[in-house]
Length: 273
Image (tube, rainbow, N blue to C red):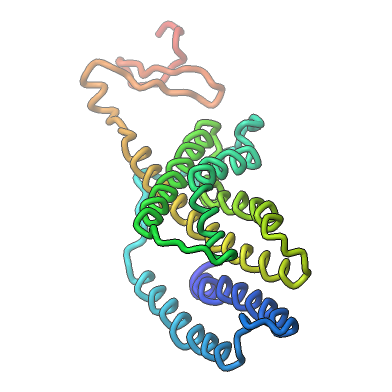
C-alpha cells in the first residue's frame, strides 16, 4: 500500500473502527434507557469533526510529508533477497510478542488499575503529573524492548524487522486486552449490555495503545538500525594494498585466490607460480 492509499487508510481506518464501535455501544445504551447514551445531534457533530477536520488534516500532513526528502539508508542493500536461516524458537514471533509486551505492561499495571477505577467506578484521579511521567517511561520501555528484540532478530540473520518491530512494541495492547476480563469481574456487572459497552471501550483503548506503542517501537528501531549500519566502515582496496595487506578473492568454485605480483593474474592460493 503506497501513496494515496496509505493516506486514506490512515484517515479512515482507525477512526472508522472507533466510530463503528461507538455506534454499536450507543445503540445498546439507548436500548437500555441509559443516561450515558449520546443523542443523534452529538453523533452528527462527531461525523462532521471526522470528515471536515480530521480527514483533511491527515491528507494535508501527507502532502507535506511526500514533499520531504526520502529516507536515506547508510548502506546499500542487495537486489537479490538473502535466504533466512531456520530460526530458533526463542527468536520466533510469538515468543517475542509475549515477552516484549509483558515488560512495559508490568511497569504500568498499577497505574492502569487506578485509571480504570476512575473511568468505570467513578473514583477521583488527580495525579496527572505522575501519569505523564508514567506514560513517558512506558513509551521509552516499549522503544527499548523493540530495539532489544530487533537486535536479537538481526543476530539471527532475519532482516524483516519493519513489521516485527512494530508488533513487538505494540504487543503491550494484548496484555491490556487480556487484563480487561479480570477487571470486569471486579465490577460485578454481569448484564449483556454492560459487557458490550465495557469490552467495546477496552477494544478501542487497546487498538489505540497498539498503534501508539507500535509507532514508537518502529521509529526507535529505525534510528537504531541507521546508527548500527552507519558505523560499518567499508575499506578501500588500494589503501589496504599500499599498507601491505591484500584483499582475499573467492572464485566461483569457492577457492581462495591471491593476485600474482608478476603478471596481475589470479591464481588459487597455495599453487606455485
